Length: 218
View 1 (tube, rainbow, N blue to C red):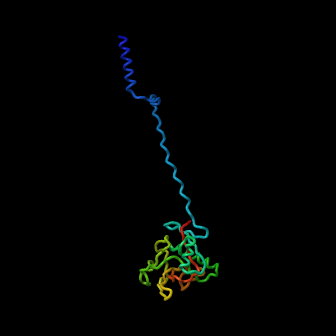
View 2 (cartoon, rainbow, N blue to C red; view 1 turned 180 degrees about the horizontal axis):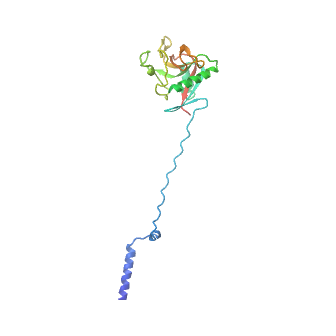
View 3 (cartoon, rainbow, N blue to C red; view 1 turned 180 degrees about the vertical axis):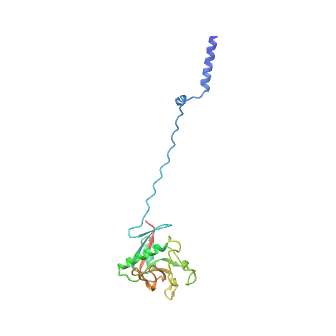
């Protein structure tokens, strides 16, 4: 009988061992194993530093991005001025708002004083819209459009008096580009009695002593 009892105990032990699960030593002692930490995602590369304007160029922080402007001296007509700006990777600049307009005007005055001062004009961006060939064809603020690829809106326009008056002269055509009038100093008026920094429509072949270029930072 003792022999039969021993055989029974051996059979039960084998059944328990075969049917049971295998436990790690930590589970046997009631300590759960620690999960492996997840792989950390690769760190994001740092963004490149913000580009700034070159030395000697004014910086304007426009809603659409940074814009760099510089006024240059030398008698020039519109097409030649646009080509001169292009050689610098720029274009004749438009004016985003009144602040830009007056800063460009003041830069032009400071440059002019280096060459004797006086009444001056700056060639800037802006082309007459084809649907606005006469003075009263369109509202003042929508008669011209910016073409530099960056300037937007109409806040940079300031037309004094009857400007833009759309004068037409045989041999010169219609006044279809923009110049900015510069007075010699504070408290003095510019040409035609216009305020310093006023805009005026002009001829493509009009010769003026300054032009203003604009471009994105490089």
